[in-house]
Length: 91
Image (cartoon, rainbow, N blue to C red):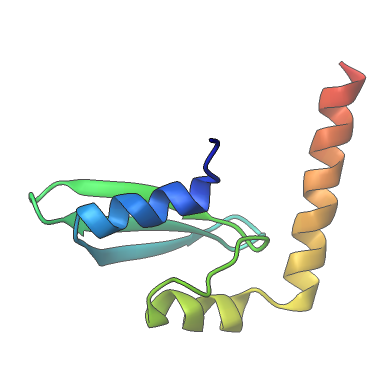
């Protein structure tokens, strides 16, 4: 059985309590670099993109995504992803 990454992350979060520690917004596509504090005191880091589903995220992430991931940003991100895929296929 193959689990999607989001399902796997959800299962991991259920086992390890994580608290949002920091959100950094990077690049012209407004990628979110997320830093979470684990219950053991360590950090867990991940990146969210404008094509990601944030419906299961904490409210602060949802609010930032709604404010920053405009239709224009989402379209720009989709174009960038398509260009990157075309370059990989051309190699």
